[in-house]
Image (cartoon, rainbow, N blue to C red):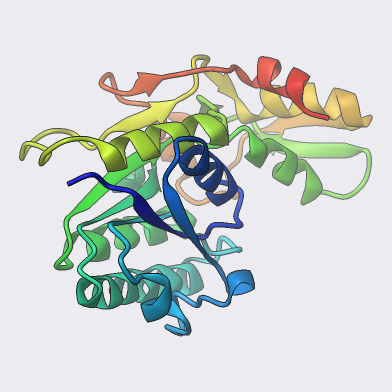
Length: 252
């Protein structure tokens, strides 16, 4: 079966925009699903129509805040709806983007993503998961959240990756042949360089005229796990550029 028609949940989001670009560049039909295109993966509005003759759903929809309970409810509902409507439309596969280390999470947004994986995997349609490191694009968001010309950013280890790189890997996974062998670890994608969030933020802060001060991150969910490298890529992860510094040089 040649897969030609994809539906992208969260198509206008930070990662979704890149997924749509990659699919379009590779000559596939793309149905962008987001509230702005009139498709609600939570309400079900327009979902049956959007999934007509779709072969694969790529799920990169995300909740806009880090509050665990609301995010969990969003992911649980969206996963069930994609399976329910997708099964009726005879969708062959769901590919979703998750986060490296999510299996260790006990609180916050990562714990909600853990539930997202579990609910998707328990549904009737085969699911493939790609776990990604934190995005390069996240660093700017961290600075945006803080007011003033000094930003206090957690000095927690990370291996930042570009959204475009994740999108390419996720599309490759969705198009990959056959079933994943049971016991095979969930694929991971991360950037080529280990650094701390504070170090990356300092590079961007220098451009914006913001002084970045590294802090221990103790206010963040699972900060101890993060400090011990719990959210760094596994030995089997694929590492792909650009580095944060190189990526930053390409940004307007």
